[in-house]
Image 1: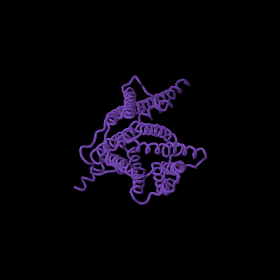
Image 2 (image 1 turned 90 degrees about the vertical axis):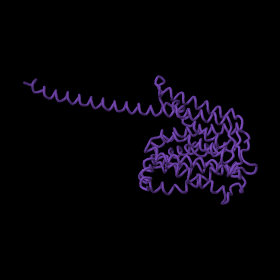
Image 3 (image 1 turned 60 degrees about the vertical axis):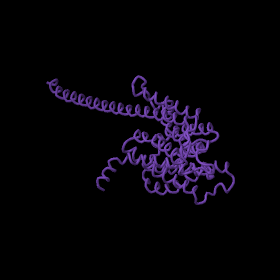
Image 4 (image 1 turned 120 degrees about the horizontal axis):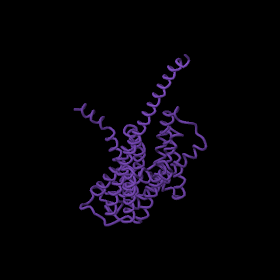
Amino acid sequence: MASSMGALWRRYAPHNLMILSQLCYTLMYFITEAAFNKGLNPYIYVTYRHLVVAVFLAPFAYYHEKKLRPRMTLMLFLEINVLSLLGVSLTLNMYFSSLMYTSPTFVTSVVNTVASITFVIAIAVRMEIVDARSLRGLAKIAGTVVSFAGVTTMTLYKGAALRSPWNAPISIHGGGGGGGVHESWLKGSFLAVASCVCWSIWYIMQASSLKRYPAQLSLTAWMCTVGGIQSAVFTAFMQRKPEDWRIGFGLKFWCIIYSGFACNGFTVFAQLWCTEKKGPVFVTMFNPLSTIMVAILAYFIFGENLYVGSIIGGVVVILGLYMLLWGKDKDQGYNADKEQESDLDCEKQAKITDFSAVQSDLEEPRTKK
């Protein structure tokens, strides 16, 4: 029995790891919202979270990638600073600030537009070519348009609140019970969308940066360190009271520890491993799972309100995401087939050249006679 279960786990290990990763992210949203309701500042949260990860990750990166890590130059260091700004300090400060004004269901739905925004930016900088005459090209274009329609719906149309029919078994709100209406919904919506745009630019920049700095673990450690310092400088201007920086050993402390180790540690490792085994499309396909789990837990367990605009927009965004992923998957298959055909043509051409050379060698003595 145990051996068959182990074989089943190994067979579906990528699927199981991605489900666990999305569950880690799902729990993070509620733990973080609860900590914010207890007074944890989002800027301080982002700062501490990444500095904790940097301290933990740096020794492993230093010893594990000694031979792989290139020499640090001024231009490379400046590039890491920009990556840290877009991937850590600016993006995450906006993202978690938006959680204070909206809801976990909303922010997890908006994250699903990152693939579409990245696709549009990649076209703009000519990193992506779209064949609008093919079905796969039309699917990518349509998926992007549908995703943007979904996020526009969520941002501009909040809709009526669907209240939970019973009292929440677990309350994560500070004083007034679950499901209170957040103020400044529009402000939070724009912060979430802006963070997704920054994330998309970061993904594109990271792809080119990894060619110059292929040590992934070291690059992650650098980004956590520099991003944590950038966030600390920004937070020092925003939160000048020393008591704001004291988090104690309660919910705020464990929120930072959990987010750092579970979401910056385990999930990053799982996603890298699954990307290597199954490819990036496989990893991206599981992102909407977090949105679904957040919506279920928010409504039935934590007593959060679900808004009609978020539900409609979230479904539309997920539909657009899968259309885009389908097009990307077919594109990769088409490009792989073209490369295979090109290799066969080159091989055939080489054989013809070799045959012609042999023939000329055979004919040369006859001409001499």
